[in-house]
Image 1 (cartoon, helix red, strand yellow):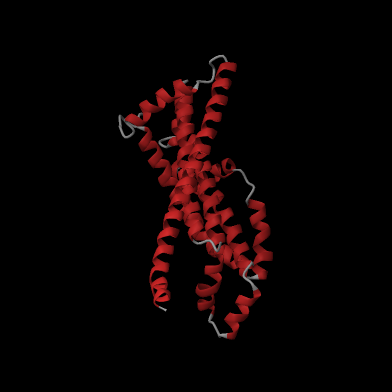
Image 2: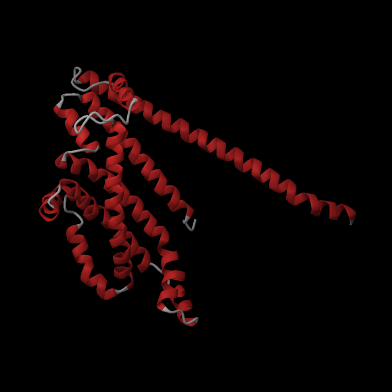
Length: 282
């Protein structure tokens, strides 16, 4: 009996300590393996890049020449020598601000519309064909419309981001809302939930993983669109930086900007993926 009491007192602490150590060890191993695979992938990219540079007889700058220019850009990223000479940090920050403004406005429209389309069959029949009609339109096709309406290139760029980034969130939200199981609806009816309580206690919590997946896809689309939009609008931003570097015949700066665009896009994607996994059911 005494041994049984001792076992009950010590077993949970020992098991918890063992579980924590094992989980930490497994986590470290997982991070190490992921890092090795990532470095291997980057190595393959560098090899392909070097081969492409060799085949092009120097027309395409190689990794070493690009890295030298990239280091020059990031070593002083926030200098400001006038309208056409700003650091890469200022260019990226300006683009990120535009992306989040357009993305935020698109989300404010896409989520309520997605809920409405997913929850109401009449709204689905009425609006879903319009979604499928407008969704494939190229971002560049929307830019003249934005200029005609807003009379300003910067606002036109935000409009393009808004109109092209809202579709993934809208479609995923409507799918999540439409996928609410009948059992959930029946429980809400049995307990006499009001529409507001059904929305906040059942529909939104169940649809949240789908909504977050849509937001993750939308931020990726927004970051893709910003480069093309700023190439057309000019002024300031990473897209304008790419176009200005091309006009200056500096492919090293163009390649450096491509790497930075990829890094920022990866960070945005990982950030939204982290949030989505926190609300996942699995």
